[in-house]
Length: 340
Ligand code: EPU
Image (cartoon, rainbow, N blue to C red):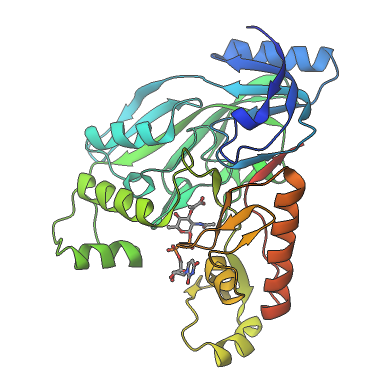
């Protein structure tokens, strides 16, 4: 395993910002993980594990530590019964090719997460989800290197502490585990309604009444291309904000003013309010601020159109957060992690 110096992070993040990483290593195996970690430890460098770079933001001054660019491959059936098949997937596999292969094997549970950029190992970190599915629903376990004990461990889904777009990997245990593979337990049954609202609407509009895995995948890919900018063409990091989770009382005034407020009842006294809607109502949809474009189809996505650096992004982000707070008294949060 080679250690490279001064590698520009803007080339490894889909938001296309970021200065050089002091040290950079391509990780192809569990042994590489141990070697890279020992190198960082011996040189007193912090480390950061980078997957597809589609949900992270790098800073202009780069990173003063070691970037471990996760490339571990693997796709292996580890258990099988009459209802399900469990597949162990290397952390460096491209997420969408995993979805494609699962569908080819007639396995259900991740088809609605088609077209999500990034790697398999990054998926549990922010508990990725789309169109009614999230990785927490099918994830059986995660194999990781525990830098605290310097041993390989297997964490159950429960131990990952999943909640909406969150896990221990980006909160309580941030920086502790290096994920090397994930195991997903996928179902042998066909997709069943009820589907996520916008997916059902797509089926209705296209007069689709038979639901196969391929049909769900193609519908999701079609909806995504119509709403989300392709990061290869327009640099972005997917949803730049999390949806807001609020309590009932916080909505009293907003509901009175906006009877059509879209809401998702979480069933525990909390409601998920689409932040894209809040940003749109605050007047930012399609606007350009400090070189950052608020996407005109879903305001949750910010596009790096002409930012001169991280400062422009931070200024645009803070303006949006401030306006949503002033208009709705709701504090919204950034979704992508920052490399620091
Ligand atoms: N809406 C607006 N204006 C907007 C955006 C959304 O009014 O500018 C409304 C929509 O009309 C709809 C509701 O808000 O009533 C929800 O919108 P949508 O279904 O498009 O999804 P989202 O809540 O904006 C989340 C995920 C996406 C995921 C979609 C589909 C988060 C942070 N984002 O977005 O994930 O693809 O649902 O399931 O949870 C990502 O994380 O990078 C991502 C793209």
